[in-house]
Amino acid sequence: MIELDGLTKRFGNKVAVDHLSCRVRPGMVTGFLGPNGAGKSTTMRMMLGLDNPTSGTVRIDGRHYRDLQEPLKHIGALLDAKSMHGGRSAYNNLLCLAQSNSIPASRVSHVLDTVGLSAVAKKKSKGFSLGMGQRLGIAAALLGDPEILMFDEPVNGLDPEGIHWIRNLMKTLAAEGRTIFVSSHLMSEMALTADHLIVIGQGKLLADTSMADFIHRNSRSFVRMRSPEQERLRDLLHTEGVVAVESGNGTLEIDGETPERLGELAGRHGIVLHELSAQRASLEEAFMQMTAGSVEYHAHSDRDGAPPPPAGPQWGEQWNQQQPGDTAGDRTTGV
Ligand SMILES: Nc1ncnc2c1ncn2[C@@H]1O[C@H](COP(=O)(O)OP(=O)(O)OP(=O)(O)O)[C@@H](O)[C@H]1O
View 1 (cartoon, rainbow, N blue to C red):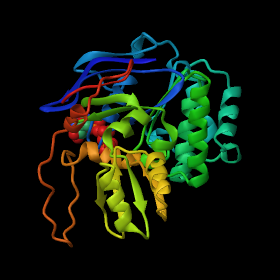
View 2: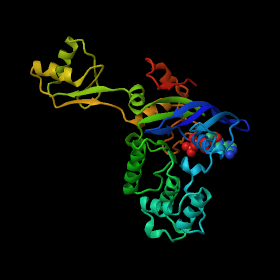
View 3: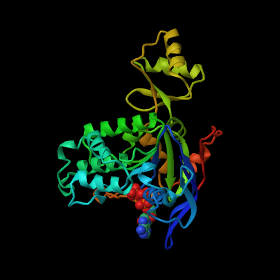
View 4: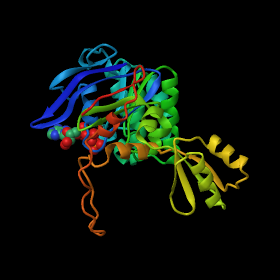
């Protein structure tokens, strides 16, 4: 378990992490989300004792990182894949780490095998591709067989096979009861990997909840219907008090109803349907919805001449408006 209590980090006037309090629990993959500059890397660096908090605390299994003896046996991390000594072989890089934490040399070969780098174990790591460097960083994280693992953008540079592999590795490690904490900007990948999400914006905690709950609260779900007898269908829905909105291409969108009820209704009146589908937003859409208009760093296209987006709601505002009552262990915090 990783415990953050009032964790705060200032760089001069810049508050990178702002009174962050949350728990990263064992037995699941917890995704760490936030737009560029939200404070994710700074938070992870403080967890590993690489940055000192301005105030607040972070504990690894109840202890400060600096108080852990042989820390690689408690927490393994992939933060910067380029942090390896380029002039050393993959094997020797890992051997040095192993020796500094009293880890038997046999683990080096074991983790190189796990990440698929055995064939290049004797090659200098400066010649490694981005993906190979990423695998070596993951091997280092696994070296001490720790109960807690932290990965910052682990799929960066990996090919599709590598992405599939790291996804399954994280799920397997979580199923063994370990604490897995992972950041990524790849929402589609995060949606497939994480069970739980911690979301921050401008250094503050915005959401600490299950993946399903996050998507449910931050996205619209509706039923889409299409029929060659659209007039009859519209009349029927109107008569039944169902509000349908036309969305172009002859489709109707209906909020607050189930496909089962609408399908049965159409069936009872002999109306042919060409489409009846439940529409649920993706994690990416839910994330964009939550962060709309409040991201710190926007890109603008010069070519389309579009003006910058209007000032939207602040981070987490929409989230806070949608609080029907938290479930145990799940919560959100206002900005
Ligand atoms: N050493 C530093 N000195 C000054 N400012 C810093 C330093 N490290 C981070 N910051 C600032 O703190 C804020 C948070 O940065 P951080 O790298 O933690 O964000 P992030 O969520 O990891 O971003 P990204 O998704 O782009 O990697 C940013 O505004 C960044 O410019």
